[in-house]
Image 1 (cartoon, rainbow, N blue to C red):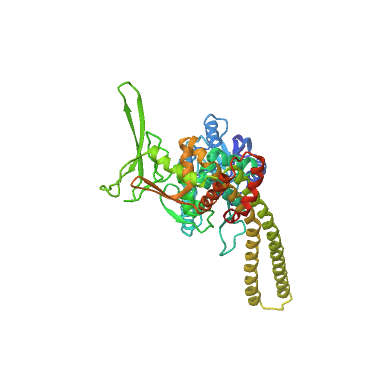
Image 2 (cartoon, one colour):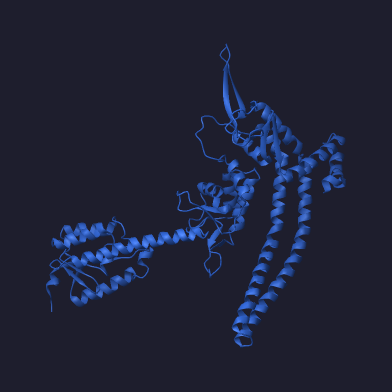
Length: 530
């Protein structure tokens, strides 16, 4: 038996959002299947099935808006949907539906369990739309409150940067953010390369993607901008801002990848130390050096002198900003004099190529010995780990056979699980430590070999990078530059003096006889052997 609704043409509209608002809602396919059966049972004519995967908490759904335009043109007079909240969860779209129903533009809305006609009192519809809108508002507030609470507990409530993952198997009391077992160490190696002062971010990116096959989530190959985001993200040394741009800084509970000192050093290498300022000139060493008298930053300025014949000369001077002590007595120093002092330090650590090649070969030999020792340690640790697993299995069997109480089981299991985790960490650390020290040692040797030449012939950016890598606590007093040279380079300074003394005794080095003698003299030296 046909009813008055059979003369109405309907759009079947199905919607589901991927957001939290629709977690319990049937899928789009399920909505369409059920509503199609309902239309067949009630003899309703469906003109077209429309669907979209969009949130309805704000206006702007393209399929929904197009459907209303077509209804206004008379292509259909009715809508079938799963629930009213499929049509609207915001007052704008909800008001539009209510108004079109009141005016008779929409004659009938059929949901899975209710019917709405133009002749009905629209109060109940308005209440349902209002409840849907309020649900979204409450959900938004609850979600934000939950995210803030998570941040205050020390866990970053958003997608974590490369090298970390959210713990997929988290249980009560466990870390919510853990190291990515595949990518953590590779990202750390990127920081290590930057800290050597020998690599630019684009070069590090190329090494990471081409040689290590490191990819980002979920887009795959890392972009040029991603390497800068990694190197400037304070999350890696243990802090984060949430919400973004709020100024609310939280101490993270995740395991830091680098120290705060390493992070600050990298920012200096990138030229990002402190608040970024508009610069009219580029100065290689501005922002790197402090005034030893008052502790203020050393800045730079350019002076241009024009001779009577029209020739111009550019002079750069470095001087204290005097922001901490206006009466600071320190005088300016010319850039050429400053670079002369830097070169003197670089010359003290410079090593010839012959020694660099010999030393790296010696390191590799030592590395092989270290690998043998490592394999012995790994075998021992593996036995201890396997024994621990057997104890856990035995404990489970004892509990299954009711040989021990649940309380004893829980206590002993806790002890064994901690032992298992400790052995696993020892195993992983032993497996990776050899490669890391040999790579760092090679970086130091290569830096000592080429730093002076690169500084003499390099760009301003290269000179800045080399000075930053040379050491820390750079300061000026009475026109003298003071540098706290890093420990590996201090050892290199001792070695360089010994190597130069050996070479002076064997001039000319080009002779075949002298070249063959070098390796023996290097080995005999207590300084170089050490």
